Image 1 (cartoon, protein in one colour):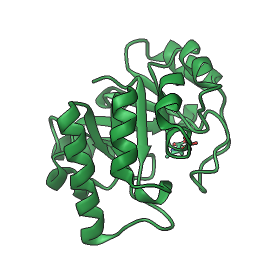
Image 2 (cartoon, protein in one colour; image 1 turned 180 degrees about the vertical axis):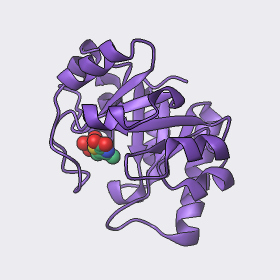
Image 3 (cartoon, helix red, strand yellow; image 1 turned 120 degrees about the horizontal axis):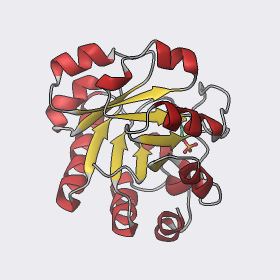
Image 4 (spheres, helix red, strand yellow; image 1 turned 90 degrees about the horizontal axis):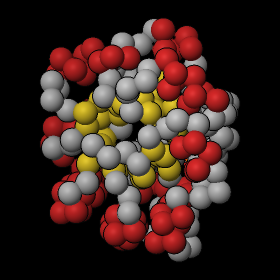
Length: 201
Ligand code: 3NM
């Protein structure tokens, strides 16, 4: 599992063909991908499933990990390598019971969420939003890179990925604070030059 440059995306984030964006991003160095077809303008039902298959196959072809977000009913049909959940989604315990072998990622935004979560049952943590983001309308307020350092000190060996408002300009500060990787949407999907954006990350 290499979470160093973790692209998250659904069709609602794309002004170009998502498959085209994913292909370019992987060729430029993306190491993991999460299909997050969610929110305003997202596909539903069979259209969502079909796009999922397409993106899943691109990841398989290039041998990078494919995750689904909390949409767990997609995990099985798409043969996802892993599932990412937030605090309000299905619990990590239930997920682990249903999918013993899949990689489970869990979002944590503050110490209360950490205390209330079975951290050791997760395979990696998503920490954020590190910076302000306009991509997720219901995102909490920015917690800063200090949150990465706090988590790193508390959990020395669990992989941590920073998320939220990460750009080519600030990605290094996230890694320097102790993260194993950066998870981004707009830094890649909205880039004019996707190849250069991924390389700069
Ligand atoms: N989750 P961008 S922030 C999907 O804080 C998501 O848990 C977040 O998009 C969290 O890279 C976020 O464009 C959106 O800021 C990230």
